[in-house]
Length: 277
Image (cartoon, rainbow, N blue to C red; front, side, top):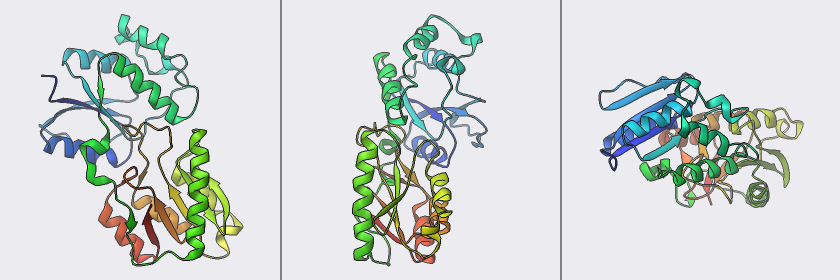
């Protein structure tokens, strides 16, 4: 018990399924806390605990009773309006009450700040945070061009501008993605997420009139990459096509690519470029 035990706190999105299956195949004794309406297949090799919302009290009770010290957090879990929203009075005890008081300031700031504070709180209590990329390191990519379509000089300039913008917004803990066309920043991801940002960008006249531009996705400079790593997948490509962009750029080793083969197939079918910088 303990060292080989892994708790996966799983939110929405395809990444949860990938990490659960990979961890199981690597020999972890997996306990999954499935948050929300997830469709995670029941498997005799994992312990599945389903919750309508994140219940800190119940999670800590189970972690303690099963002597689980390793935690991996994956997928989207809605942010609470206040720390008490994640506490079920049925499981309220001295430990969870202490967490509530320590969490008063956690919700201030962006996601990078939020997760760093959560990780610090957990580590002070003796838990080890394991990143999704540690369990499945093949989900990130090294630098290079991953498409048959090359990157034009104009698009390289767009990527350069997007990277500069992403670095600035990263310092401010705003978001993980930027859209640039003709040297002009057209959209910056905030709380809405990448897909909604792309839907918003697709409505702009500057986007619709002629194909061009790039979406850059990257980790924030102060981000704890063990949780909330930037992710792209087939749905991202679908929205890039709708937004009439020419290509996608991501940063090396810190953006997860879900269903890589499908992503590459969609890149080629839609004549996009895909570069890792």
